[in-house]
Amino acid sequence: MRKALVDLCFSLAVIMGTCLGTAAGQTSGSPSPIAIKLATDETTVDNDGLATETSHLEITPSNDAVAKKVAQQAFPFSDQMEELVIIEAYTQKSDGRKLPVDASQIFVQAPQNVSQAPMFSDQKTKVVVFPDVAANDTVVYTLVRHQKVALFAGQYFDFEFYPRLTAWNEVRGTITMPRSLPLITEGHDLSVERQIDGDKVIYRWHYMAPTPLTEEVAAIAPIDREPRLFVSTFKNYDELGRAYAALAMPKAAVTPKVRSLADELTAGINDRRAQTQKIYEWVSQHIRYVGIELGRGGVVPHEADTVLANGYGDCKDHVVLFAALLQAKGIKSEMALISLGNSYVLPDAPTLAQLNHVITWLPEFKIYADTTAALAPFGTLPFAEYGKPVVHAIPSGTARRLTPVLASGNATMSLKTVSHMTADGRLQGETTTTATGPFSFLLRQVGNAIQQAGPERAVQGLLQRGGMSGKGSFDVVPRPSDLGPSYTLTAHFDEQPGAPPTAGQGFPMPPGLRVLPYTGDLLMGPLFVRNLPASEPTPCWSGTAVEDLSVDPPPGNHFVQLPADVNVHTDNLTFSAHWSQAGRVVSVRREFTSHIEQALCSGAARQATSEALAKIAAAYPMQISFVAD
Image 1 (cartoon, rainbow, N blue to C red):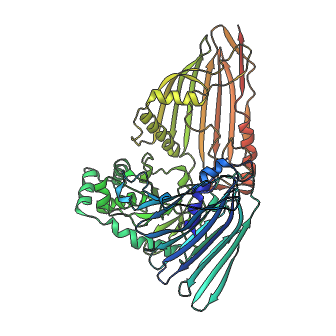
Image 2: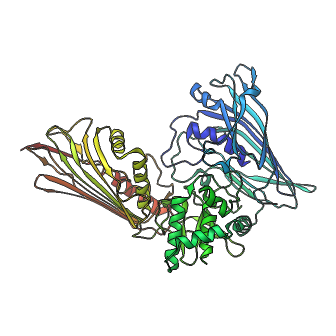
Image 3: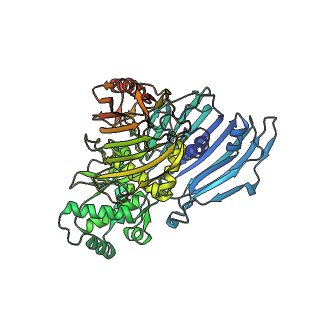
């Protein structure tokens, strides 16, 4: 069933941005532009865990713009693992006419990254172009997926979810299983019925939501909060971890090429942690990451030698090569399945719904590492990987664990901007941004993007996004790939605001070239997202952000009426904004610190945080003004 919903979600995501991972603030303030008139799914699973799934969908767009999107449906599949057949496809016109899709309008496309990563070329997409689709017509199709190879031999699992911003007039689904393969089911906002029929067990569910929400603002993934269903023959995550270990661990065998490289990388280094860091940095920098979601096609990584020879790989290939190189030096590691996104909950029915990425656990040093991050210093993870449930691929023992929450003091960010206003209203100055921990990973990503675009063009792009014009440059030194404990970017700018401030007119304190979040944003939830309810949980982390901004007025002028200071405090955060003036120069120092020992802010902590963030947001932008001397 997951395949049918993923296919449908490609369309919904393009139209509404609601299916494959809703970020905070993505909303729809008007009725749903499409309605799912009917969605049926019949799946039959054999004794080996291989499934044959027949899906039927009828999709009605409400306007011509959406009709153009719905008129082309894309169905991703793995050529090696399944067979996909379009049984029927036609446009049902609102006047009753039926316009079949011509065979020439059904074709297969290879993914865009195939030319860059040919060993992933089994990933393809079957595209169907429907004729003459207009508002209130209905796109109708039936397709069959026959699984040729199971992801895990003898096991079956699946999931689906129904975005509340979409009208679901009727959904019906069945899964027919052999009695020899007991199925664990977990439904949220829908129920599952179980019926025994001889040597078969039939699971049925039904869902209806013909009146969708007109707005839904959330900070966690739809798979954690929407009406959803998980099914699995795995009894628990220990079984899933053992099954993955059996497939993946043999690929990390130490070969002569692997051993030779490991010895070369660690020559002259005796400390085992330093050896691990050297190998981590080499894999991060020399093996190009090709993002293929775990479960989209096979879950089995390639052999370490193959990844080494190609010079690229997906997450599981990265982990395999890293593990093999470490093993060559006698250093143990474990593969760990995790969500690379804003999903924080694992269902009791073990699936890969929230496990789309693989990282490494280093038991000797008690740290997780992700070589695919490329620009994260050793011992640092991206924000999204802290405090997450993980499933370790181990032959025995407890597989389901948690990555640690981000410790206080590890994530810091500081911005300092010194600005000068010229007589003709331009702003000239310098912005220096320094970061540690996960913030340094974000800043290095910015530095990498600046190098690709060019330092001067990057400045112009930032200014244009803020409604200004001008020139300037970034100093991308050191290189983003130099993975020290901190990272700094310095920008020089000469900008022309769209409406240059004039004497007596209020204007916001110029931030310079801001490339990381505002002070107070991100760490305890989004700062400027409209209508995010206080009841909605948000990801949260401990950290510190500081900004110091200063500006002096045009020659012959001075500032008047400084804004009032702002101080906000809860059990988990503090914020202050202090304004001062020294001679002609006005300055503001904003400082935000958070302390949290859980990955999600919810309940009373989220309520208090929501109120605090509203007060902090009100501190931006504070108006200042100048008058003639």
